[in-house]
Image 1 (tube, rainbow, N blue to C red):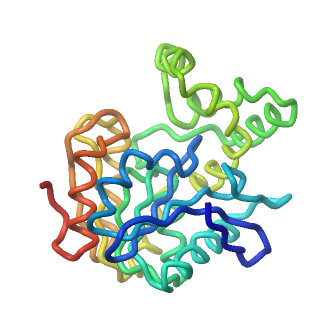
Image 2 (cartoon, one colour; image 1 turned 45 degrees about the vertical axis):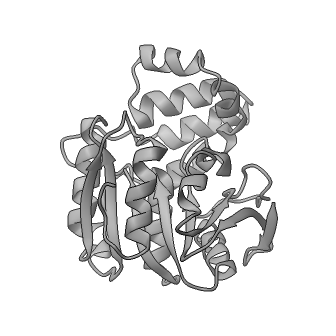
Image 3 (cartoon, helix red, strand yellow; image 1 turned 30 degrees about the vertical axis):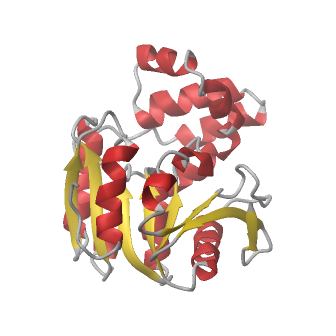
Length: 264
């Protein structure tokens, strides 16, 4: 992977592919750049993609003390590698990070967000001591329990849904990435949509959701789009919190190249 040094000296690893307008992609909890392995080949005929490992993941470095501002600087550094101005696709908490980076004034030309996980009124928020309890599990290196706790208390999974995840081939990778869950927890904050701050963001944006996602994620996507002055909501066929690459790629490519959001 290629490397760029973030403002605090942390090395951030990324891959570049394709031709066309630059598009930086970043994922959410439990994931590194490989989450986009099946999406990138469908985008590269239309865009130059930059996929990177967020700090603490994959081949990227980390720092002793986490701060959202450091992750904003990481994404900004990758945008600088892309020429100083780029479209950004952020999935889940990566979408929240993309919004924070845009609010910080980075050179983001367009924003495509997949279900940023804000908690709207009427939908359950995690307990106030959630972060402390997660940190305590990780301090004892109880990574599997930390991952289960995150899924149950922050994501809202049932025991059956957690059991399905634990029996999937992804679970080992989830445990390996558990130390970064506090980073995604920090990005979620108290869960509330920062509508007043988003109202100042003058960036063409599309907020995508799956037609089969959870009710709270749909509500968050719709509210995020409504809060953005140049935001639109786009529902696409998919499953919970995910739109398949063959559906997502054409919509993102059309948006990034200026044709506007839409299905193939």
